[in-house]
Length: 321
Image (cartoon, rainbow, N blue to C red):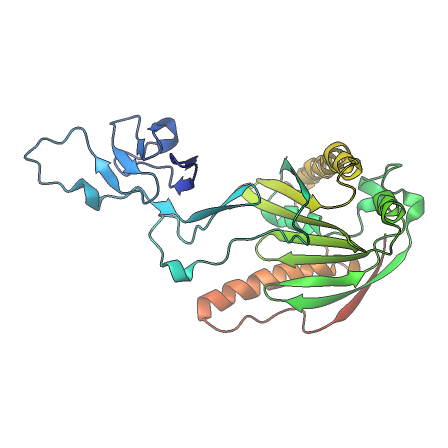
């Protein structure tokens, strides 16, 4: 359960009343306490500590303050509420054990920002490897404003390891994609792009052209085994007085995402029959790295040993797209 207290500070509680497992989200919150709609038990919005049990008599020996609904540490950043769920029960965690909250990199004090979201009818793994797949663009995203099958050509990109992820090293953006051509026309400067993937589910892209920049982050979050949510946020300082970037993101962006969603819906029909994949050659190497990195991280957490990174050093991948 996600909400805000009286000062607009966010809180995240486990959405189950410990009394009869009734969802607390059906209840009421005054910004200080959340009241269960079943029996009126009340819990502190930040700690989940029980404060009131209306059915108790004055001589009851039950100490309601020893009962907790479960809560999760959270912070708001870039217009998103991030919750750290280290355990399903919402048990308290030491402050020094919390990881830093993800932050969208920005490169000047003034910029514009935009957000998009969409549901993807697939598992989080398929959502993530679709996010990093370089070869589907000319087939799924055919459009005058993006690219066509005729634009396919050979590409070579260098990758390097980063903590809990891997990076497509700074390179010139694809010359066969219309938005990048527009960027070059606007800025009049050569552009470079850097793309990072970081566990568990984040893709960062930074485009720099002279004093102009665009920074984006895409996350894929599991909702169910067969459903995940894509969240995209971008910030930029490119021509703030002329809405060309905003137009690309708000008008063309949803179409781009809808194309991915449609192909995933069709893919799910095949996955229902056979949930196996062939990951072949360099075009699918990032997907392999993702699965290997995820397995290595889980093994590191289990054993306490350092993570064995699947990307041992700089490597060049080649494919056609």
